Length: 443
Ligand code: UD1
Ligand code: MG
View 1: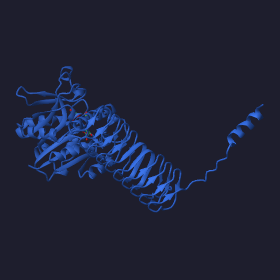
View 2: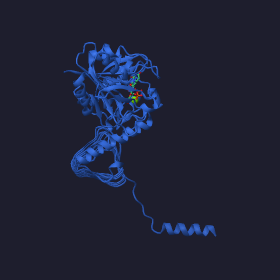
View 3: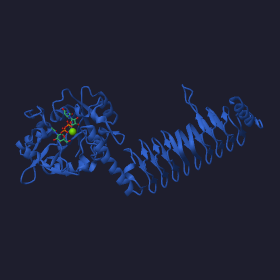
View 4: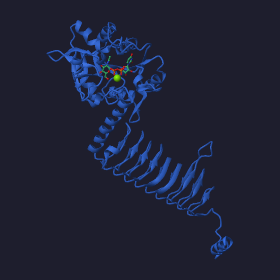
């Protein structure tokens, strides 16, 4: 059976108090909408229609970049009205439809599949969950035989209904044609004067279709409506990734201090010390060691490398096997080949460092003249003396040495020594004579 989905993302997101649309706020570096779309794809959903408001240009652009189709809800009249807005976009579709809120970043393909499995029993299913704090979620009332009786929105609920702990997760599955027939019959006779998606099961029942219930894990269906809930979703997402990393053979003595991105790849026997932060696009190979307070983004680290403490790997950093990158070293768009070392206080940008080269403390690639970036190429086995400034474009030959404190402005041949610094003059006794004279003047 072919599968399509409608993702609801047209809401004003008022509770976020943000100029950025709610579904573009990020968890682990990926917008909320990106998480939902990924889970749907993993569950085998081929077509995804993202419903946006007329003003939701940024959301539409992002959805298109994810390969989704779009539908516009011209007025924000509620979740049911939003889902119905996707009718034209899916007029040629027959099959099973998943309707899901765009603000559920922890949703997984398993959760979506559970909802689809329940749908196969009756023709309509609702995903529910039992949160520790039911907050303002819609409350789910069941029939004696365990099907959905109705959903009561928190704002419409009586005190006794609010005491119910089974809640609506915001994910539905139905036959597409039937769904749009029901959605077109919704009314807005409720506290918020909105067309509630939650009333669809009532209309299905009038046609004799019962709504089956799937019960999801609380974490997977966490909804984000405010900054506090965004922070809570981040905390839960990080908890999930940390547990997976530990299970996959990554060592972390204080996992609660390590922050991963949605796409971080870490192989087994990697050791991650406390307070390491991952931005997007990082891969770390077997047995590497990431020391405390290092920050990595868009970087690959090969087996056996040691990074940090206090190192910063920026996009395009390619760290080879057994390389050592030490404290206060920043690396951007640079390949460091096998066994090379840059252990202290260095900036390497737009460069290649050959195998086994040694980069002394305080080395700087001067790669930017305010207009363009230029390349520095350091040969295998080269020794860059401390406090060398490499003015790019420049090439240091294999095995060459630069003297400490040099400013290198031309290419250096392999195995040569380059010295580019002022000539040292030593004046014997000068310092003592100076002090004696000053003391005499003070008397
Ligand atoms: C909704 C459910 C509630 C459930 C909760 C789960 C309804 C009426 N209530 O409440 O039962 O417990 O989700 O998280 O469905 N949206 C539109 N157009 C609109 C209104 C909303 O596209 O006119 C979108 C929003 O962008 C959002 C989603 O629908 O992605 C849900 O809307 P939201 O306002 O977050 O609903 P909740 O109050 O969370
Ligand atoms: Mg919500």
